[in-house]
Structure formats: C-alpha cells, structure tokens
Amino acid sequence: MRLDERLSLAFTLYDSCGLAADIGTDHAHLPIALLRAGKCRRMILTDISGGAIQNARDNLIRAGLTDAVSLRQGDGLAPVDEACGMISVLGMGGKTIRAILEAGRDHLRGANLLLSAHTDLPEVREAVQGIGYRLISETPCFSAGRFYLMLKAAPGAERLTEREIRLGKPLFETDSPALPAYLRHQLAVLARRAEGLRGATLPDDGLRSRTEEDMAFYRERLAALGAD
Image 1 (cartoon, rainbow, N blue to C red):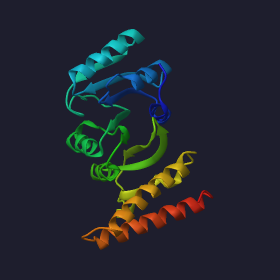
Image 2: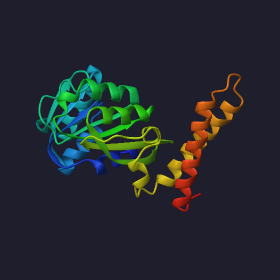
Image 3: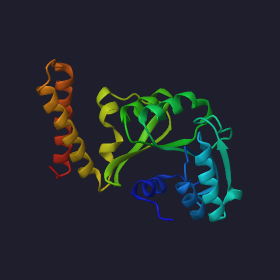
C-alpha cells in the first residue's frame, strides 16, 4: 500500500509513540503505515461511520495488524479514553475539526496534534488557540491536484494575531520545497477574490482592504524566498 503525498507528509510529521489515535480513520492507510514502520506501537482508530470502521478492519486484517489496534465507532474524540502521544484528525473540513477539538478537549490529555483541513483553515487555528495549544509547524504539500496544509500543534497557550489566524504563523518558517508554489496558489486565490470585490454591486471596503493587505504580505514572503 502506497501513501499519497498528503498521507506521506503526515507519516513524516507523526511523532513516534507507544499509543496514538487517528480520528476519522476511514480505510486506516496511515495507521497501517505507522504501525508497520514501528513509529506507533499501538493505535486507537475511530470513525463515526460503521462502514468506515469495517473498511479499516478489513485492511487491518489483510495487514495482520489487528492485535495492535483498537477500533472504536463514535463521534470525534469521544471514544479516546487513554492518554496518547499523538492524535491525528485529517481530511475533514475546518469547521468539523474545530468542533471535534472543542468538544473533545478533555480527551486530548496533552497529546501532540496533527491536523489537516481541506477548508476553513482559520477555524482550525482558532480552535488550536482556544484549547490551550500552540502551532509548532504548518507544512504544505500538493496531492491529487490540490494543495493541503498539515498543521502540528502541542500543548502551550499562544495568542495569534488576526493575520496569523488567517494566513498562518509557522508556515512561513517551514523549509518545505512546496512553500513557494503554495504561496503563489494562495496569492492567485486572493487575486480572484479581490477582482470580485472590485466589481461587487455592494462593495465591502473592509474585506477588500484586508484582501489587498494579505496579497501584499504573500508577495513579500515570496520575494524573501527569491520566488516572486
């Protein structure tokens, strides 16, 4: 089983630990890779869907890893009742991940977090801050025709500025080779938004100004990377 670029990045960023949990595990591809490599000795795999749990079970049986896994059907972090070294929540919308973190904060028990949302990244950053965690890395990758950002967080309160919530903070410190392409992509997204705002019947001057400021910030970062 070969991991795609997104899950390969998750594998690389995962902490080695005795027990980890993967929330919304679906087919359990990442946990299987982690267990085979010995990065995790045991894992709790959860999903709200009974069908996903069965898919995971089938793959774990084929991999001969059922003894290293506890499969649990349930909502978010609710089934996690043991202290884990690492908890991953990947492949969901940002609002869903925020709801999972906020509702299940008492189940985290100091675990490091690996988070990847395909929408609404500011919601995830706000949730991380709100549960008393801090972002320690934001790493971009390109997989299956789109960009993803993998966020890693650890316990420890930190206050982010409004711009850092919108655009990220440790993202701009990463040495990922995908960073320039990711920033150019985000700049193009903002450029399309700015064009729409300029032609809007009811102009939103605040949003337009903020969008132009964010575009200028991305250009500055690209110039600093020598990739403008």
